[in-house]
Amino acid sequence: MKVYVHDAGIILVGKGWEVIQKLQEYNKEYITVSNWVRKMTPK
Image 1 (tube, rainbow, N blue to C red):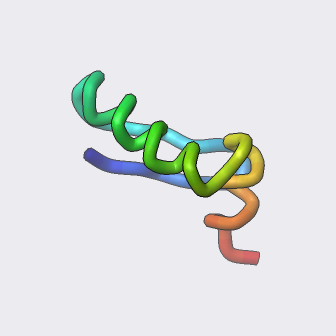
Image 2: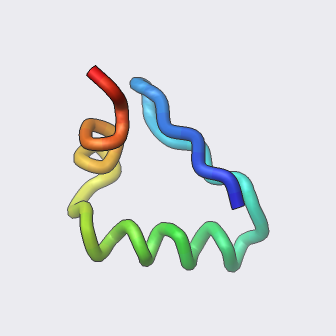
Image 3: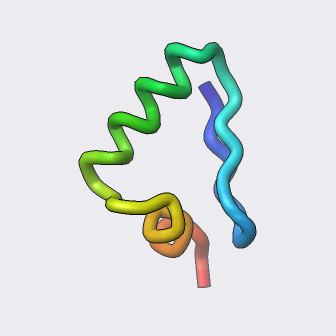
């Protein structure tokens, strides 16, 4: 499972079940993908 975060969004690479599991994991911490990207990208 690989997660690439950049200014425009995110890219999740892996098997379908891995992607779903990772999204569920991040959903507990971040409400939206844009919040996730803002917190993960260096300023």
